[in-house]
Length: 465
Image (cartoon, rainbow, N blue to C red; front, side, top):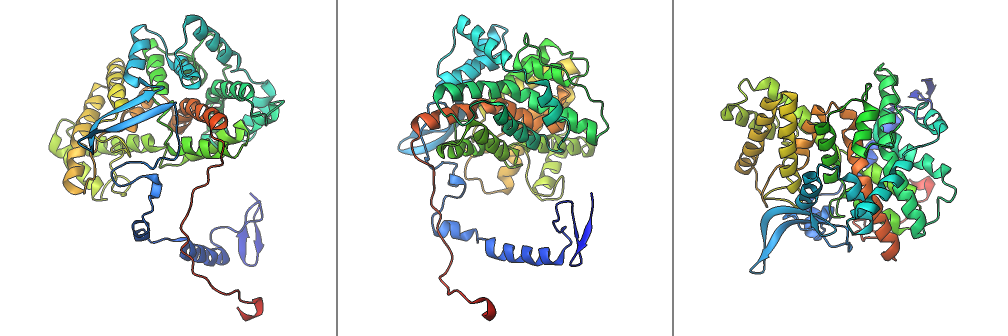
């Protein structure tokens, strides 16, 4: 990268001063002073920061048919924590997964149909839908050569966002927000997201890690989950259990009631009347944030440290001691957080965790990693007790979906760089469903209110400052 000297500061290829620039440092101090808000003011003005109160109840900001997240039941006029429930179009996630799993079928495509159209497809309709998705997986060869490979990104989510906006250019009518067009665009994006994620990873690995560049074209005979493993692995080989577990993980991450940061982002951007591609690119930017989509990576790395520092994985006291050190900011990343624990809504249990645990145990058996699975199960039991003993808990604490998902991805030999992109490959379905719902029944731009904390002051002429 070319560097020049401007006013004593080093600049990058864009002519921007680097972080050591004293002017930039001074402006940073000014920005910090003018941007920082005292957290106590949120309580003083009754602002529900994060659109949730301390008990996890959210501010109603919209209506939806798509999904529902339940962590409480009403008893005697009060909200009482209850085992968590996740519903897609009114169907409990346990029943949905149990239904297609009992027939030894992959269920992601069926779940896509349900979330987009509100009903479960019959056999003929499901076959037609799968065919349409398969046809949408292909992109022009020049798209891969000109968009994905020449400018690899260290972060795959950014590369995917760039790819989504490039697909806008290939669309002959990208700004049309009529229902048939948006449906066509949504299905195309659902189909191409695995390709965008895997190819962006292959390009990044080749450029920045000196990895071999292996590009497998998608196979129209395979499901979304199977295609991910086919395109990712150099030999394209995978077991039936591996593809079934990945398919199940995609189903579990496809939707979460509309109140997540990225789904709300999709609704907010959709309400402005913009195009489908801009909406999905914005949602990707939201999911990229470590407070939203990257927690399972933290869980995996925390367990790496735990396994290296705890000598006896069967000793509850040693495990508890490590967890206490994490809470006391003496271990792992010194944030005081036990990753994979707690959720804004669920308190007693996260239904996704219960399903993931079962599949993680099966996969660990196939991979010979039963000891690691038992360690996860122990931490899942011990961590809530440790947290409750040291922190003021406004509601219950239980393991969330990230607790086992990273362990599962690692067993599937999926690189960490793809953990959050895989989340996007799944959640694109929910984003598209919310985009459809917003453009058909929203009607108004979403524009919340903010309380101004600024005091009035006079304008000072330049020569008097």
